[in-house]
Image (cartoon, rainbow, N blue to C red; front, side):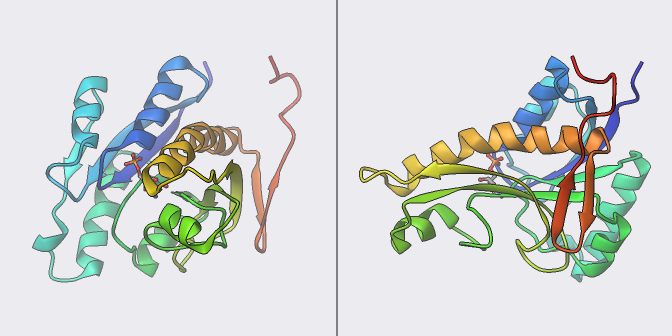
Length: 211
Ligand code: GRF
C-alpha cells in the first residue's frame, strides 16, 4: 500500500478548504491523511468538520501566549507529535514566525484568494473588484518568510463579472480553491514539486503511476 502523506492543517474559520482536502483523502484522489487540525478560534466551523470526519483537532488560543514565538512553539510541538510532513494554512489568520517556517522547510503551503502577486493581504476579492480587474482567481504557494509571497505552485483564473459583488466573486473563487488545493497537495505527495529560486517545477508522474 502507498504510504500516505501526513498533513497538518491550520485554520481559523469555516474550513471549506479543509473539507475539500478531507473529501479528496476520503475519495482517494489524495494519497494523504489529515493527521491533525489546529485552530486558534474556539468557534471555528472547521471543528465540526473534524468531528464528523473523526480527525484529531486542537484549539490553541493565541491570546494565552505572551508572544508569537511561544504560540508557534506550541504549534510546532503538536505538528511534530502528529508526525506531520506537510503543513497547510487554510484560512489561518496568524502570521507565522521565521522559526516556524524554518521548522518545515519547503513543506508549508497556503491558499490565497487572488492571482498573486496581485492583491496580497486581507479581502483579496474586494481588492480585485475595487481595482476593476477583469480576472482574479486563487493561488496555492509555498510559504516563505514574506506574507503571501512564496513560490507559486498552482493558480486558477476566475473572471470578474459585471454583476459581481464581493460575496459572489469570493464564492466562485472558493470553488476553484477547493480544486487546486488538493491537487497541489497530491503533487507534493507524489514528490513532483521542486523549487528553483522563485520557480516551482512540476515533474512528470513517475513511470507506471498513471492510471
Ligand atoms: C480562503 O478563501 C483562502 O483563500 C483564504 O482563507 C479562506 C479560507 O476559507 N486564505 P475556508 O475557511 O477554507 O472556507
